[in-house]
Image 1 (cartoon, rainbow, N blue to C red):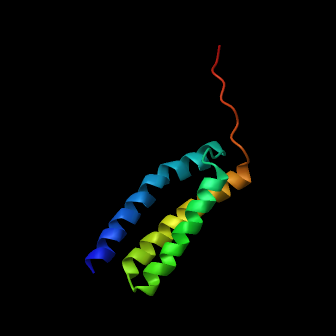
Image 2 (cartoon, helix red, strand yellow):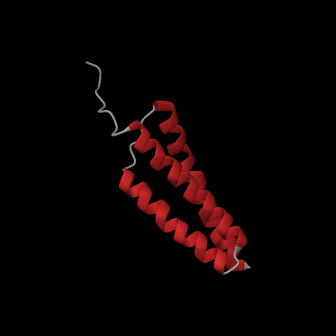
Length: 91
């Protein structure tokens, strides 16, 4: 039970930390996180979702699934918007 709660807290922390990245991608219609990074992270987290489910750590399973969902949404943004545009400073 303690492990379930600790893993849940950590995963929810990761999930909350990703929200600004996700919202910035929506606002600017571009995503700077590399597609491979977000896909690999979402894939590996989905393995943790299955592992926590097998161990019946239900809170950790839900929190890991939420973090996986956010990473998948970031990957989807990068795929949909394409590579980031180059920034240029005004003269």
